[in-house]
Image 1 (cartoon, rainbow, N blue to C red):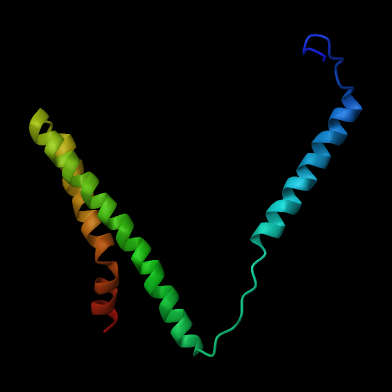
Image 2: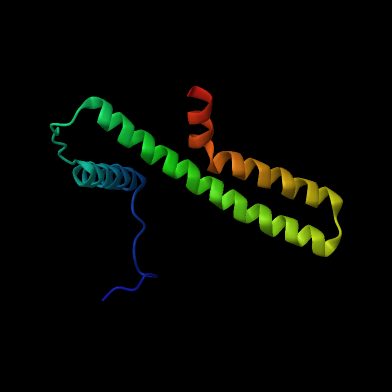
Length: 112
């Protein structure tokens, strides 16, 4: 059995070929894992667009909720440390989180 100390170093040409071969194998595995058959449903295209819109607005709402939580923590910390600039940033973040959270409802009110 050979130790790591007794191993001969790999020649640079063989090392390059090994790196290229490894990259090719990894890319082939990734492509084969991501290949998913998509079958068209008998749905109306407008329904598909509406479902995608609902999904995207759900993601936006989740980001808004995270911002609201961060804003509440920021305001609480600013009240504890008596820092007016942090308090202002907290209230601005809170306002932005509310707007982002209710973006779908605001757009529905605007467009009618």
